[in-house]
Length: 224
Image (cartoon, rainbow, N blue to C red; front, side):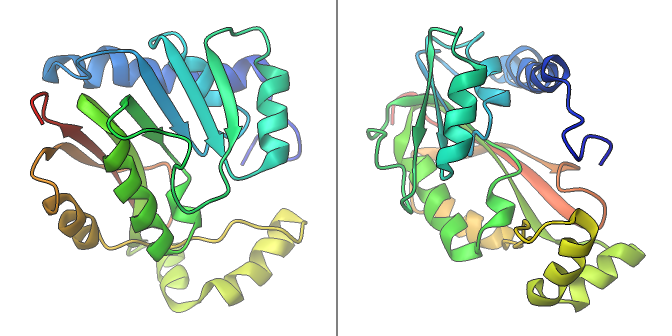
């Protein structure tokens, strides 16, 4: 909230992404021996390239994908000096630009929660499709509201009504909706591919107050 209205400093913006990715690459994943290789990483829903830029420190090639052409342009402008990262517009319901089993690490944070559950499941299925043997897909999603007073409001009001308050609070017409996804639906999807395994699932605070958020790490077996 303290960064709304153009109050981000660019250096601080990218430093926050570097801290998040370094935590994954240097603390969370090494004890698991993952990812096995560091050739290609994908930042799905890359925005201005906050995490894409950070991933470039750890992988030979990084591709940031986003539905917004204006965000892709912004990402290219802010990251023109980084030679091993690229940005592509992805407007379809799949990762059409990415080949099967080619990605060593996929990151998707604060993205899925803003699109309908049916589309979330479709994208997660494609995360699994592109995952290389020994690779990891790390994605965050919202499973519902919590038991706080704010969470009880979220539970009672649909996005249609919440958008009214969001427009007032954010002082703009275009706002981000929140769309919970059943964790059991992701479990069912995971079970369809015997080469995949859930290596880590944890509560996550990135969705903000009032929401219950989860962060999953899914790996494809090195022999699969």
